[in-house]
Amino acid sequence: MSVPRLIACLGNPGEKYKMTWHNAGFWVADILAREAGVHFINAGLFNALVIPDGPDLIKPTVYMNRSGRAIAAFLDSKGYNADELLVVCDDINLDLGRLRLRDSGSHGGHNGLRSIIDSLRTELFSRLRLGIGPPPNSEDLADYVLDTVPDKLEEEASVMAHNAADCAMLYVTEGLTSAQERYNRKQDV
Image (cartoon, rainbow, N blue to C red; front, side):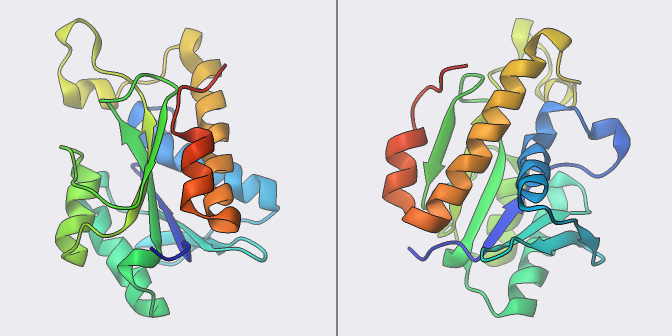
């Protein structure tokens, strides 16, 4: 597996989705951009930037379930292969605050990952999943991931997003195994 040349962070465009669980990937992108002192530029299907001395970083400007089209377009424009991609997204199957970095795998029911797999015709790309926990009280899944993060969980969500940003950059600088050993466990908040 190659070191990521592209980090694609998933979410939904628009202010109304900004603080929803499904935008956890966008939170990470914004942290990486802020820490690098760079700003996103709109390029149609995605907002993009280059982290100085690091990878490209994008946030698709299409909805989550169509993000594969944007990511495939970016990879094609740069001549990158799928194994040079790291996707950052939310995961209801992980407890809040937990991170899981893998070098490949299925979509696990995540519509953003499904779209990417369908567009790239491969599951052989890295993904960093941020645990948002399962819907409480049998709430509808779609409603839950589009719910605004409750005030009482904002700090925990923020710590998780910062840890995920650190994990992504550790993967870029020191490799998959180092990042997995450090972050594929419950993080202290």
